[in-house]
Length: 228
Ligand SMILES: Nc1ccn([C@@H]2O[C@H](COP(=O)(O)OP(=O)(O)OP(=O)(O)O)[C@@H](O)[C@H]2O)c(=O)n1
Ligand SMILES: C[C@](O)(CO)[C@H](O)COP(=O)(O)O
Image (cartoon, rainbow, N blue to C red; front, top):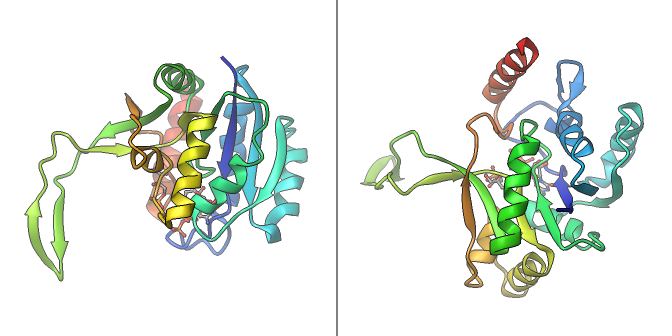
């Protein structure tokens, strides 16, 4: 079952405070983005990759693709102000594919097995996302005081890659644009046009590198992988 993948990598990484795009930070001698791209490069179901980058960093990314012999990148498009705008630019470059995955460049530990599960679910339901049950108690807080404790049993932390039928996610993005809605993930755009999104069990190791502490966890995950 074939798919193309859009990889947004055009963020500023403000919470990471690294002084460089967090996708260019090295983990075991390879930039984060290369760890991410290699998974798709090695997946036979992946027909092609659309990368979304900042114009100012385009050359740097191109050099990395050559150096690490990433061959499946079909196009590199420019990012937008918000993640959603970057993804939309990427989606417009997806051609001749029924299914598309959208995956954060900053999530280097996705597995091919999980990807295949998601594509199969997208084939059946139109949209599918990986998620893990929330582990912490979650409270709604305002002005430094608790408003309420949210019932946790139905709360899941949503990850990427998110898999979609191309026509559905394009419709959802177009509608969000017309209506001025900006969400923090792509599935939320599908939800708001009244379509169902299938949730599959993700993996707690499929972290997004967001703050400096995440780099410690990332190194630990890589150590365990190397031991195997
Ligand atoms: N305008 C944007 C914002 C984000 N992203 C990408 O979307 C992914 C998930 O976003 P996030 O982790 O929030 O990244 P940043 O926006 O870079 O982080 P921050 O909010 O800390 O600045 C990242 O791979 C990031 O590069 C993007 O392509 N274009
Ligand atoms: C898409 C996402 O990775 C799902 O968890 C996430 O919402 C995007 O990043 P942010 O940290 O919420 O901006």
